[in-house]
Amino acid sequence: LGVPAMPQRRVVPQEFRRQFKVYSVACANNFKPNMEEGDKILLPSSAFHELGRMHIQYPMMFQVRNPKNDMKTHCGVMEFTAPEGNAYFPFWMMNELCLNNGDIVEIKNATLKKGTYVKFQPHKTKFTQLSNPRIVLEKALRAFSCLTKGGTITIKHGKQQFYLDIVETKPGSAITIIDTDVNVDFAPPKDYKEEEKKAKPAAAKSHLNDRKVQAAPEEEDGPPAMMKGWGSSSSDRGSSSSYFKKLSGGQTLSGRQPKKPVVSSLLKAASSSAAAKSRSSAASASKKKSGGGGWGGGSSKKPGSPGYSFKGSKGHSLK
Image (cartoon, rainbow, N blue to C red; front, side, top):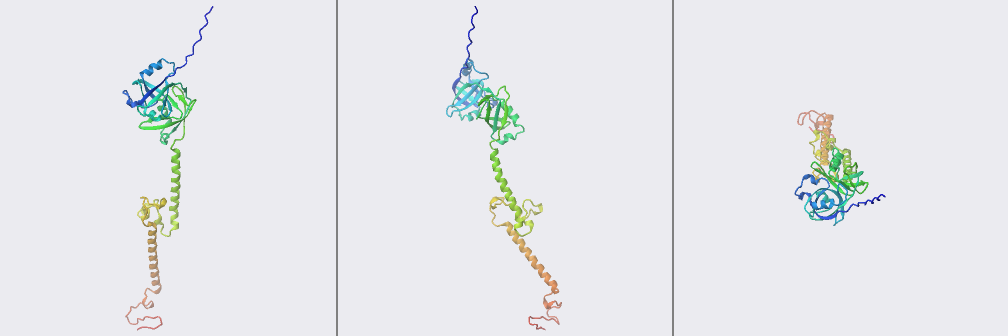
C-alpha cells in the first residue's frame, strides 16, 4: 500500500513592520554622493536578520509612512549598515514625506506588480527643453526600484535638479520598475500654462503700442522725421523723439513720466519755423512784383535826390 502524500503547506509571506528614527543619508558614516540618487534607503542589520527569516519577495520593497500626516511612498533598500533603531533616507524622500531628522517613520515590506506604464509631469519646462529628456529620465530611473502614483521624484542631470510628479501608473497605484519594460509618457509641465497666460497680455499690449506709434504721424501735422521711433535710420537717432517710446500709461523707457510732451513741442517749433519761412518768402515775392523798392512806387531814385516824389494817400506830391 502506498503512503498518501502529505499536502503541501502554502507558505504565506509574513509581514515586516517596524518604526525607526529617520535621518538624511548624508548623516551616514559611509555616505557617498550616489546615495542621494534614487529611492534606496539604509536599514540596521537587525532588520536584515528579521527579513531573512521571512518568506518575502525579492528584491525587497517597502512601504514608508509618516504617522503624523499619513503620507506614504515606496522604496527599496541599499544596505543594512545603519545604527540600530535608525534609518537613512535620501533627502528628497524626506521632503516628499515632510520628515525632519529624528522623526519617527513606519516601514513595512510590500509586494508590488511589475509596471507597464507611467506618466510624468515635470514641474518646469526647462526639463522638456533638454536635448533628449527621455534618455535623461531613463538613466535616472536606473537608481529607482519602484514608483508611487501621486508622488514626486527628483532626478539630477549634471548640476541641474528636476522634479517630476507621477501622474499615473499601471497596473496599480504602486509599481516596481526592476527588470521590466515600462512605457513612459509626459504631461505638459506645470509652469507651461502660467507662461502662456503671461505671454498673451504682453503680446496684446505690444500690439496696441505698435498701432499707436504707427497712427501718430497721421494725427499730428509736422515733418515725418519727428515721429520716427526706434525703427528709424541711424541718421534720425539724434532727434529727441528717438529717445522715447510710447509705453502703456504714457511712461518713458526710464519708467518716469515725461515733464513736457517732447514730440508736441518739437512739432510746434517746427511749425513756427515753417511759418517764419513762409512769411519771409511772401515778403520777397512782394518786393519782386513791385520792382524791388518800397519807396516812390517802384522808382529807382533814393530819397533826397532831384526829382524824387512821394505820393500820399490824397494824391499830393512833395518836392
